[in-house]
Length: 287
Image (cartoon, one colour):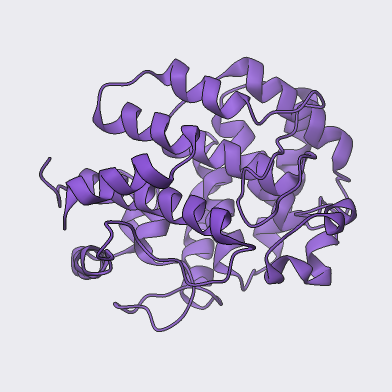
């Protein structure tokens, strides 16, 4: 694995956001610089916009972007009350606690987007999407009456339903992680672990044979909440595959069609950054 090539790929193709996160992880940069970069995408309504998730090119706030922002802060272990309370304002006004929240809003159809966001289910309210946002908000450590009510509803859904999508199961794990690890959490953790192994878009095999989440995306660092789900051999096999997937230009590929060349470069820079973070955490690179 060529670290210098990967770094140069990020400097050449990444947004300021990716460059700030790279600087924070590898060059002694500050949390404040990462926060300033991500807050530039936050709109006055508290949600995030401006193509933060590169496959959708709208300036408007979207649940998709808001989850992307919170997940990046989670991955970088950065907490900020001001940003999070603004997010609660946005999500609480956009969500219905009975039906959930859509991943993208119908108004996004006016803007360029990847083909997979043309799926009509993308604009349907979803409790799974709400669970993802609630977990990431709770992880920030803030307190809010709406958040308590939303948490109870999402926990009831986790305990009473089995999900078959690895993406939503991964999000549900974050909600469990954000809570005190009391007696009732362990059965839910075990249930989600079982659901994960039977879910769509989960790639246990190395190398993966199709698009999906690998064990490294569920447990991207050794002290991940979900690390215990996977054997050491499984993690090592996927680490070796990840190293082998680096392209000649230093970046990592993506397995879907983005809505243009700029989105392609942004996604590849982001994935390269996250892969470097994981490989570094598992002591797989020297730099």
